[in-house]
Image (cartoon, rainbow, N blue to C red; front, side, top):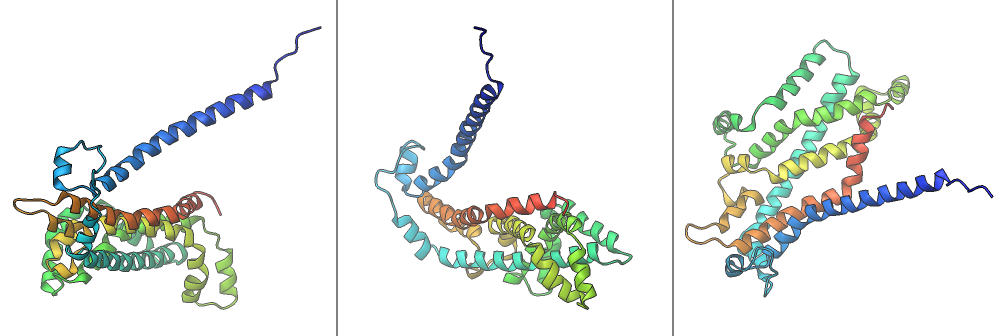
Length: 288
């Protein structure tokens, strides 16, 4: 009897499974390397100075110091810093996304002579180094009485995040179908009603993407808060960590606990909203 030929579909299926398994293993290794710093920081936050310097960096704490978290929250004023970070971040994110949506709507949906120039001016903002603006901003805020005031931080975050937010929204608005807006115009809707009730709800995925990117930047920002804010009541988590660094001694366990507390909100937000990020990015690249 003639020998049977191997089935190509079966061999292709086995090859596909092997390749897929290899990809999963590779991604698993990458995930371990990504997660390991968080695990190390958590273990670091449960040590005292003696364990930090005498034990191996990878050693488990002999007696976990959970009191480090209680100490930084009660004695280190971290609760106030945490609240300030939430207020600054939330206020500036809402303001940035709303203003950027208005600007993008005006540029892509309304016909006026200077829309190209206005878009170009906002994109120029992407090329301005942040640190080069510290002295002019300090002088401006000092002259209008906003030094050591929360509004100086919120306005600065909003202004510096507007260009990147407009750029993210612009791609989505370009592929957004106009039929719904045209139907609203035929029904007699005003421009404000079209923006708030028609266009804005349709851009929810990309707005979520822009909001998360803004939130990560605002939450981790250090330079502006350290420059414009001096009162303890207005400092954020990133600046408050300095309280545990003394002239002669440094409480490393408390610093680790503070860093762990500062990471958790961003980590949780990213985990719960990661699908929104993917939706926003993919929606901007597909013609509606």
